[in-house]
Length: 273
Image 1 (cartoon, rainbow, N blue to C red):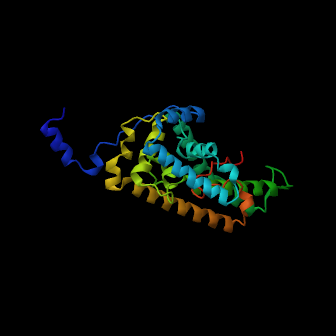
Image 2: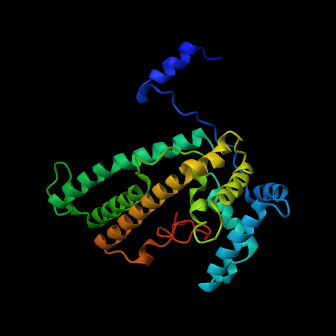
Image 3: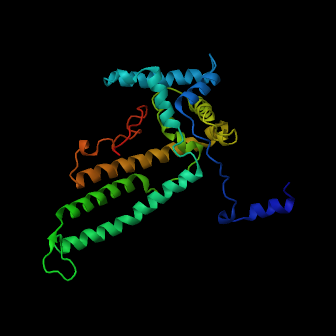
C-alpha cells in the first residue's frame, strides 16, 4: 500500500520520472476456427454486440456486392475479414525482437547499397581485378542493387514510423475500428463488440478496459483513430510519390498497394515472397 509520502513523491515526479506504462505479454496465437468458436459462445442472441456485428457485416457485404465482388459478401468471408483486421500479428516478445532486428538491418543496409551503387557508377560499372589490366562490366549487378535499394526505400515508407505508439491491444484492432465509419453504429457499441472480439484472442480484462466508457468520454479511441488515419494518408501519399518518381505502374507493385485501409473489410492479401 502506498503511504502519503509515496503519493506525494508520485505527484512531484516530472514526466520523465513517471513510471512507465505497464506492458502485457501478447497472448498465444489463435487460428480462425478457434477464434470463431470463442466469439460464437460470447455473442448471445439479442445482445448489442451481435446486432453491431450484423450491422458491420451488412454494410461491408453491400459494398462488395456493389463493386462486383459478391464472393466477398458472404458472412463467412466477412468474419474472416474481421479476424484479419483484429488478429495480433506478432505472437510474442521474442518474435517482436526478431522483427525489430530485421528492420534495423534493412535500415542500416541502405547506405551501404547506395555507396556501392555510387562506386559502380563512378567506374561505369567496370571492375578491374587486382593486378589485372582488363576489367569487366557489371551492369546487371548495378541494376540489381538499384532495385534492392528501391525495395528497401519502399519498405521503410511503410515501417519506419518512429512516432507511432508501441503496440498495445488497441493497435491490433485500429483498422477494424476505422472500418466502422459509415456503418451507422455508435461508438460505445463499436467498442463493446471490439472488446469482445479481442477477448477471444486472450487479451486480459485489464487490457480491455481501454474500450470502456471512460475512453468514450475522453475521446481516447477517436484520437487514436484520427492519428492512425493521418499516418495512413501520409503513407499513401509517400507510396504515390514513390511510384511516380520510380516510374512504377500499379501492377508493378502488385500486392504492395493492397493496404486494408483502402477497403477496410477486404481480407489482407500476401505480397510476393
